Image 1 (cartoon, helix red, strand yellow):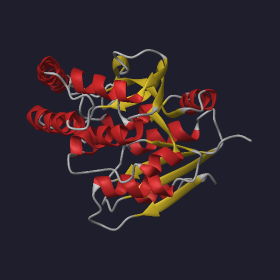
Image 2: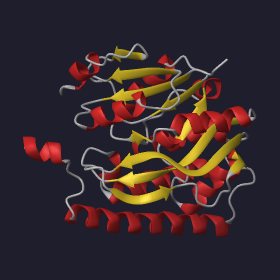
Image 3: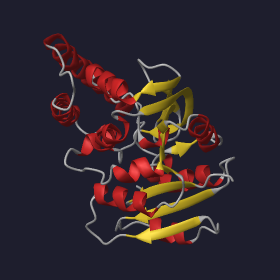
Image 4: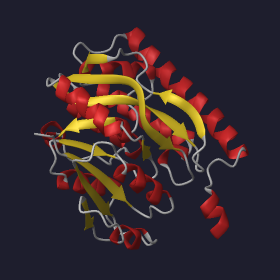
Length: 286
């Protein structure tokens, strides 16, 4: 029997990027999909657009106004009925064979609770900025989830990538619910730790989609906020490790997050100079 995959999309004022994302989902080579859009009480044309999608695989659920991002992510996830679940943010894109390849990874490795791949980074207008980002410090194939999380801690950056690059086994993902919004900029990473620790992860060193940096994406917030929140995550994570990080490892982790912040600041400055955070459609309607 062909496995059913739920693709769940939390939506909040998702236009104009929601159109491109939806097209990338509907055009997947893997067709046995349960596609759920969870609209979180936005005020733009997202719900009108979603209601106009004529595809029997698509379901729309609406959350009340005031629903937080974490609450919407949790509601979207819990609505999925497939054996596997992929959550993807409204700004991002999937490559045509993304789901087929990650389903292959999980079916070929039944011991793995999640499949992780690389992703490209594009700007607001869809122009490629960086190719095949993520999964640094790990090998293709099966990896120990605890080791991957420890590598993330030491590097000071999320080696798993955004949710678009991850396909979960439904049971493992639901057992880790809810998505925790107490530290919003590491919302995804906190959940990955609950799923991956003590388990096996399968890694594909190949891009399965595109993460978009735009004026609406969380990644363009102040680097100082990102630095503070990632440090908070590192401190929390270090308390869960056995054995605990050594003094050398703690120093390496502090250096790693500082380096990542410096690189991010430089990248954001360059992107602003290029006007890469604004879509052409939004410029036309400004």
